[in-house]
Image 1 (cartoon, rainbow, N blue to C red):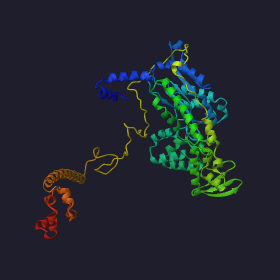
Image 2: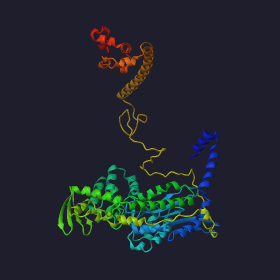
Image 3: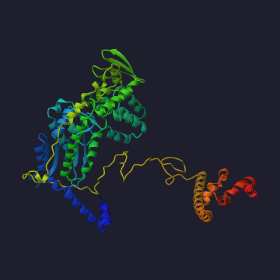
Image 4: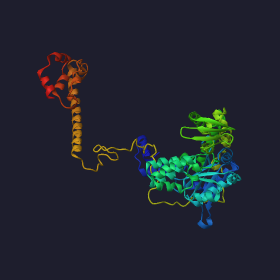
Length: 577
């Protein structure tokens, strides 16, 4: 509830005209009662850490703070939280694919919210860990990834991890130091935003996304050669970056994920976005509650699934089966096939589960070439999907349980640590609460900022797009001035005629209603000759015509006699116009 709506409610309900500052202070006090004070909530973080460790054994909560020996008081610095249910579910039932991202907190003490998100078998978000740090940089990302490596344990080196980020500050150095064997991807949407600053052409945009989605070298080289023919600088800009970080042609085949944008972490940030302005303890509690409910709902929903594949995997597989009808399969023996399309040929090996287009190996779901070969061999395509998309694997991911916490008044106190909030660092100007949108990003569809249907405007003078007649720069020609004058005159005549007609029809209607009870407009509508429709000059719609006004006020008997009489003045009116 905003301050202005609070003032309006007080005036409408109680007749009180409160000042804006009074309503603001009342709102702040009520929020401190229901949500807690921002500064005092930091003192409960040590007790919150101990309570999580007590109720959820195996969970990791790391609380870092500045020591009182150097700062006089213990001031909060960082906190890292991961629950055992999320850790075990990620290792047992998710792909070795992790997305990293950070977003700013909106409280008075600032901070950055870091998160690590994975994908389950149904391509749903599976949060692994989250943290609150003082800023985003190499040191904080090292702190986050070091704790993330600890919860993975022996799997940190046993599996080949794939980590995707948004090109944040210092994250590349932290990943190379703590996960040297992992593959690092960057979000192609952020890469494209930097790419189009120097290369704004529309064709370059088309070829950029075509190269990013290319799974084999043939498609990749074809798109890059077309880009090189348009702009050599754009070609060199992309080729300077390693292919394994931005194009599917360089992706590995172990992660079973073909994501080229990091929208999973951005979706998670939006999922918790409402709580980023609340006190830190209240925010962490609500995030824990949402995760607890989310895991339970996903588990109950997965129990009702029919079949062995997740619904999202079934959707992709059915699409591949439908597209495979346009392919011609030629068997070669020993589970090898040659699949012909309109534009190319692919080789499929069902024993090795490979296809020369590499789409099957990267995603783990048979593409149209493999689906056609499987159908020709009279086998079930479901058995050729990767086990990470199975129903049993998805149940393993959500089989854990986050145990609830008691009320904070019942938590055992931690007398050894008296934690204070970090020193506020206020920047000049009014603090921003809305996220700064990138160049070309559409506005959110909210009540205050609704995106326009079209951003193209057309000038009425020169009929060119990009400006309107108010911002028309060139002087008008004689023809344009005459056309504009005629248009303005016609508009003025139309407005005047409409007003005159309305006044006359009302006057005549009132007179006719007093004698016969029927208005002249109704009499005119009942006229059988419909002479006004046969009039070629159409003067009754553009200019004042005394004959038309007189004809509107007469009865239908006169219009019937006009067919035989044809008055001389009407003949003159038809020729004179």
